[in-house]
Amino acid sequence: MRRPNVTYLAPLLALGIASSSFLAIAQTKAKSAQKDDAAETSKYRRLPTYYGQLELKDDQKEDIYKIRESFGARIDDLEAQLEELRGQMNKEIEGVLTTTQKSALSKLKAGNKSSSSAKKEDKEDSDEKPKAAPKKKSSTAK
Image (cartoon, rainbow, N blue to C red; front, side, top):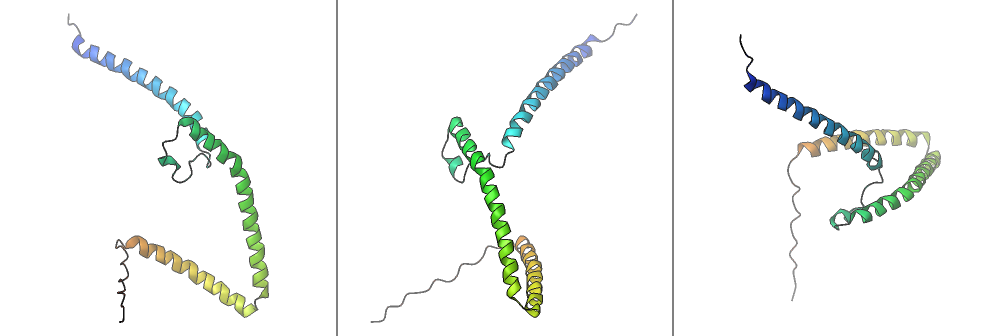
């Protein structure tokens, strides 16, 4: 009667146990990460420019996030109002124009959109750094 080879069975069993415990830990971390992600996905949960370089403590960061969150919604409302006001202003300004001027303005805007996208493409294609303007020599007349 032939006995199964136990030398292969032990490592496979150990691998199975290790991988199942690893998966359980990973699932637990994933659930806690989802809870943290919900809080961190807020667009206001960011430090202002340069604040990340100040070695802030965690409680300071949390205070900053709370402040940004409290002001953020109001700022968004004001920006929406500004956008609406700018739209109204542009309509009134265009109301001053003649039909010919309105048509010319539409063509200019359409040309600007296509040229700005072309400029973006050119900029992306170009790897050259812009050349510095030559320095002017100061002349002192005596």
